[in-house]
Image (cartoon, helix red, strand yellow):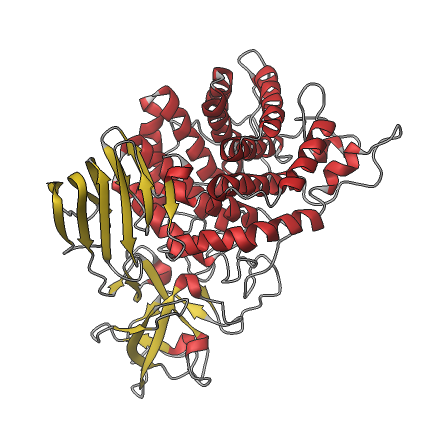
Length: 608
């Protein structure tokens, strides 16, 4: 669905978040790519004299990508709202790109600005194709969102060089960080130049043949351990794995190679069936930012990088387009409303890089790899601008349209205009389960029914139900002009446990309400009670607390006991102390934690 055909209601959770992104987050990213020299690295090369550029390159070697993702966010936001807030910046940066780009199309300020570096000499770690991919995606967004052709011309020159150098008769080079695959496909979609699609196909076919130097984390770190059709387990650096999967799925969507889709479905079952955190996070190891073994999901050591959840959403989106299966939209929603939503604070200017499911009392949050609260920026700043570009384009993920009608994948208030009908959605979801859709025009309306929504009901006026509200599938209604469809979802809080093979949380439960995962935060407990002392009574009812106007309109009251502290670190096995004090305590949505300052938190609570 074209971006201007999908409008989120600013009063909705997603719509409000998109407005916050437009008002604060994108500007924050612009300020920081300026502060950290991501733009100055281009200025330095553009103003170089006969003796070369003055000073040295600053920032990580992939700093260009931080600027490119910020530009992509600006492009989508311009297409969504028509803003020209950053027109002067875009004009300056386009000038810089044109001045710095070499005659053969190469553009990378780290390599060009560092004496002794040669293009594509160290593909394991220089991220040149990765950065090129983000440039292509920024150019597509700026062209599609605002008609800006200058960036598209720069990106095409970059892509043309890739086609020449790494085409069928060129060097068989792949990047240590997948990303260019999906970008080349998107550039093909924007321009119609099939050489870009062929280049993406070659990147996919060349991946996994151990052509990259192994390095300290092994070939799987670069996703170079097995060809894509042979890999059955999600492994290695989680963001690289998920970006690669998105690119492979994009290639399938254009060339129809069923063996690629079959491989991606197997890989998806591994990633989402055995290695995903309940919040929609991916990656359990800090050491190499990677997936662990199946069911290795420690809550306190969860890496769950924000970029991984964004990449997972992007992959699920492509799998949804490829198959129409509701399970992919289900996981988009899980990641979006939990892991991704938690990654940004309520000002839109502070962020988590990793997203743990438990923060212990006394946690040392002094290092940015595992802070106790969100930070304004990071030395490796991939996540904030990645979040900005996702949010600026979020309306485009909510629905799809075709000759038959409109499909609603994300349950959110808004207006979605298809070829035959327009669907106006009114709902307070995810805070309430009433979803009212009013249709103008005629055709089929399909509304996703969440997998947890057992007992959902539907009332239709001016239409005929084609497929009823089955959890985990789509409600389908043949609508006449003026039809209304009301889907009512049960929002009763529920306790959820993990597979017994997730050793780290055996004997624990978490509380969910609708699509939201809840957690307990130290800020809601008495000073003399620690989060670690809580035990939940699973037989007691969970009581909803309504707080209208609050950023968390629905809190939950849980009942349990306080476990007395142990006198010794280890003691003989025997019955636990009987003197447990009853307590009722509050749970808040996971995405809202750490907005009141640093403090202990946990998603998984031991049962009494």
